[in-house]
Amino acid sequence: MTKHKYLQELDHSNFEIVNGEPDIRGWDVRYGNGEKIGSVEELILDTKAKKIRYMVVDLDENELRLEHRKVFIPIGFAELDDLHDDVLIPNVSVDQLTQLPDYKRNALTPELERSIASVFGRKVRVEPAATIERGERKSARSITDDDIDPDFYSHDHYKDNLFKNRSQQTRRPSLHESEYDEGLRLLQKRNENEKIDTSDLTDAEREKLLKYRKELYRQRRYKNESV
Image (cartoon, rainbow, N blue to C red; front, side, top):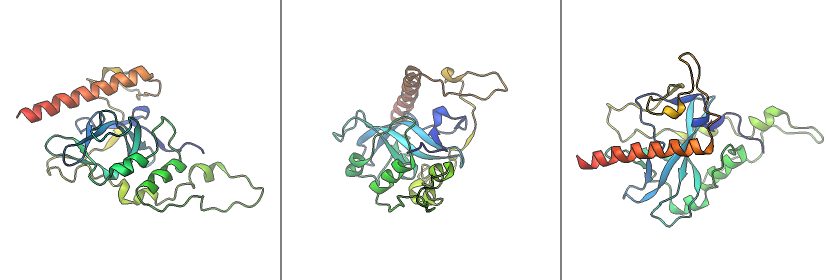
C-alpha cells in the first residue's frame, strides 16, 4: 500500500506550531485519574488541510503495564489538562490501546488509517469507491487519494478538542510556514528568508529534540505543582 500523500510527521514538514502556542510534543499522556499512559512523541500533519490528524504516543513508562511501543491516536481523542497541561485521553480504553497498530516512521497508509478507525468502532470502506474493470490498472490518483473517503476526517475523532477545557484567554494551536523557537537550536538551519527543512534530521538528532521537549515539559509541570 502506498504511503499517504498528504500525511507526514510535523518535524519533517515545512510547518510548525505557531510561536507562543502550546506544542504538546514531549508532554505526558494520562487518564483523568492521573494514571500515566505515555508521552507525545510526534504529531502527524495533514499538509493539504493544514491540520493535525494524529498524535504518536510512546507508551514507555506507562502505569498500565502496557507493552512498550508507539501508537497512533486520532487527535480528536485528546484534551488538555488546564492545571498541568497534560494531554488527557479519557475516551480511549486500555483495550483499545492494546489493539492499536504500531507506529513506524513514514508508514501511515490509508489501510493503516482504516485499521486505526476500526479499533474505535468506525465502519470504514475497505476498497476505493471507483470500480476498476478487469485488466485495468489503478491510476496514481485512485491509489493515493481515493483509498480514503473524502469525508473520513470530518468524523469527531479528528476534531481538535485540545482546548475545550481551557480558559477563553488561551488560544488554540494553529499552523503556519516554519518559524521555530530560538531555544530549538537544532532546527535553526536557514537564512532569514529560507524555509526550514528538517527532513535530514538523523535519528540521534530527533531523539535529542524529543529529550529537549520532555525536559521543558517537566520544568513547567514542576513549576505548576509548586505554585
